[in-house]
Each structure stands twice: as structure tokens, then as C-alpha cells.
Length: 536
Picture 1 (cartoon, rainbow, N blue to C red):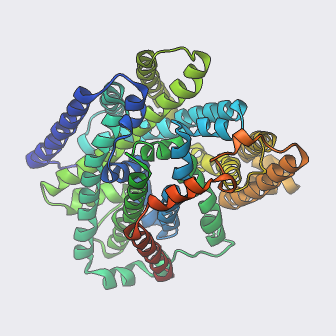
Picture 2 (cartoon, rainbow, N blue to C red):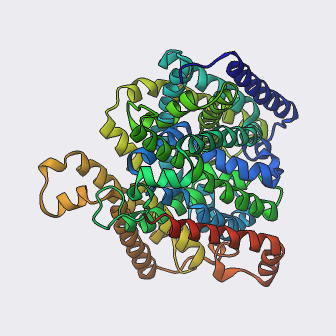
Picture 3 (cartoon, helix red, strand yellow):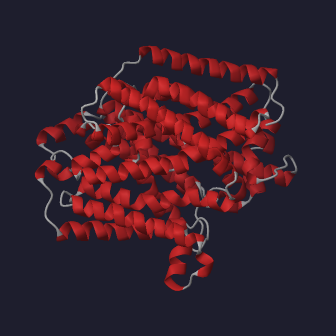
């Protein structure tokens, strides 16, 4: 992104002024209670909920990496972006149970449904996972992006970004996070969308792009034997990871819990699902355009990950380039703010409040602020590790979610859909599944020394491993639950489909209207069309 001119800097400056204006407005409206600090007073509208879901998902490493994958491999990774239908599951299936139980966090829901041990386990695993993966990767990618955009030293850029984002997150809590994310979503889509349109114009249109890039780059469906993107792994393994990420992970679900009511939460999920379709066209597609332009000599890439920044620097006119640069900064800051706030919520509600139940609302909010500050400091402390990390280990960090998702997905799915699942089955699944997943990670690091079944366990495609682990976790959860006593009734009432009262069912029907049904059906239709079109 060399060549930012005065107008571009003015655009970026205006973006930051508006961002800080929103943050300042929110901070003035804050209340010193946990519902306001961690869930924005449960008063957000559908637009803010949907935009926050999207902005939380899209980080700077997501943007740069997705475009890079588009340049290197084409469309297979679009399967993950078409998880928009799973965002619908969040609103239609999971949210009513979360909202009805009145919880702040996903571990808290597990305590209501199973027991406090399940809550402790998920809280600690989530916190450690966030710091090691989400915080560290976002901070590292942020330093790289700032350096590419402004020429500012990597370390300086990373620290400045973390401090600025941490400041408004600490002061304003969840309310500051979701309202700034609404702005960041608009800037992100406008900036990246400009790259797609101008890139298509430069290459000569859609038909020309398909001809130059070749059918392989437009094929989402790779053979089962493909080492990187087998269609079975993407379709089924990706769905398992998707349900964990979109329907049970605090990082995302917390956004829907800020809604005024379940109906608004559902509408926000539907809006977020539509936004989730856009990365196919504003991140992946520019990567394919960049690949085509290298073939025609219009563009030179040092590496595929440089696809989006290079296109922005080369193709965009002054002013628009500033919007695109602000979009990259928006992606970075929104994902960082989200993970800071989610970590703070998990620590305060699931750990501190459990240890000190007599704490006042004001004390809990202050603990939340301190917890956010600690996560910010951990993020900064992790920068040297991420800066020296090898590319291989970076890939391991990205695949970790495929190793931790299956047991959590199983416990939430079976816990909601089958009342016979008890706390012993849930715990056996969470602990057993976690150990099996981590065994894969450890063995993968030493795969050259292995043979036989251990070698297969360590080297099979990570998404195929995800499917296998999911099946094993299903077996553990069902077998242990059936072999032990039935759960107590108080662990079931209103928390599983089998125990919904007539009043609950009537309330569920009132929470949606015909427009919600039609919009959801249209979205699924669009996904099917995309899956059918990108076949090479």
C-alpha cells in the first residue's frame, strides 16, 4: 500500500474521527452495571446486531489471508464463507434457548443445562484459546497491515492499534464495541467492494476473468483426495467448525444477546447471514482477479498474501484508496475489540463472579475493565512470539479450531436436542474430545517419527480429522449418558426441545413473521445457487 496521498490520509482521519465520536457518545451513555458493560444493556437493534456479528468475524488476517487463498487456490475456501446458513441456525434454533435462560455467556448456559464443572472447563479453554489464537493472530496481522499501509514500524503499529482499540473497549464495554462495529462494517464493505469492481473493469469483465484465471480457480469442489481442500472436509468438517463458531462461541453469540428481544436477535442474525455472503465477492474474488492480472502482466505479486494490498495500491484512485485502507484498519480493530470484550466477559462472569458471588455490579464492571486491560497487555506481550513464529506453526494455530470444535459442537447440539444427555456425558465428551484433539496437535509436530495408525492420525486432512473426532465425541456423549443416570428435571426445563411448554412454543411462534421466513429462504436459495455455479 505504498502511495497513500493527502486525500487518502484525510479520508482515514475522518474515519477515525467518526469512530472516536461514536465511542465517546457511547461512553457518555454508559451505566455502571454488568448488563450494560457486557451486553450493551440488551438494547441493540437488528442492524447493529447483524453488523457486529459480521465485523467480529472479519479480521485483518481474514481479509488478507482470504484474498491470498483466492489468488493461490481459487474458490474452495468459499465453503467457509457460505456458512451464512449456520448464522441462520444461531437465530432460529439456538438463540431462543440462550435468551430464555437469561445467560451472559456460553459456559453459563452449560452450567444451567449440565453442571458448574462444564462451565469451568469451557470458560478456561475459551480464554486460553482466545489469547493464543484470536488475540495473538489479530495483533500480529495488525502490525503487518499497519506497516504495509503507513510504513510505520511493525512493533509501533501493533502496539498503537492494540492500545487504541483496548482504550475504547475498556471505557465503553460492549456498547462501544457493537456501535463502532456498525460503522466498521460499512467502511469495510465499501472499501473492499471498490477493489472488486475496479479490478473486474481492469481485467475486462466477468467472462474475461473466467477465461484468464481458468476453470480450476472457479471450482469449489475439489476431489476427496485433495490434500488441502477435499470437498468432503469442507462441506462436513466445515459445518462442524461452523456450528461451534457461529452458534456456541462466546465471541459471536454475545452479539445476539445484546438485542432488545428475541425477534430483534433473529432479525440481526438474518442480516448478519446476508453480510456473511459478501466475503466471497469482496475478498476471495479480488484474489482471483489478482491471479488473473499476474497472468496478463497487469500486476506483480511477491506472494499470494500480497494480493489485496497490492491491488489497492495499484488499482484504486486517490480517496477511494483511503476508504479501502480504512476498511483494512476497521477489520483489524473490530475483531480485536470483539475478542477483548469477550475475554473480559468470560473472566468476570464465569470466573470472578463464581469465586466472589457477593460482588456488586460496580465491582464487576471494574473487574471487567481490568480483565480487558490484562488481555490487551497479554496481546502486546505475545507480539515477539508471533513475530518470530514459523509459517508452519502459524498454520497449526489456524487448524486448532478443527481440533477443539467437535466436542463443544456435540455437547451443545445434543444438549439442546436430546434431554437424555446428562452432565457425565457432557463432561466426558468435553474432556475426552479435547484430549483427542490435542493429541493430534502434538503428534502432528512429530509426524516424521511416526508410523501406522499414529501416522494416519497425525497426517490426515485436518477437516477429515474434524469429522472423525465429531463422530467419536458423539459416541462418547451418548454412551456415557445412557450408561449413567438421567439428568435432573431442573437441568432440562426450557433448555431442551423436549421440555418446552405450550407457553414456550407459543412464544417461539410470536418471535418471527413471514418476512423473516422469506428472507431466510431467499438466503438459502442464494447459497445453493453459488454452490452450483462455482464448479469449474
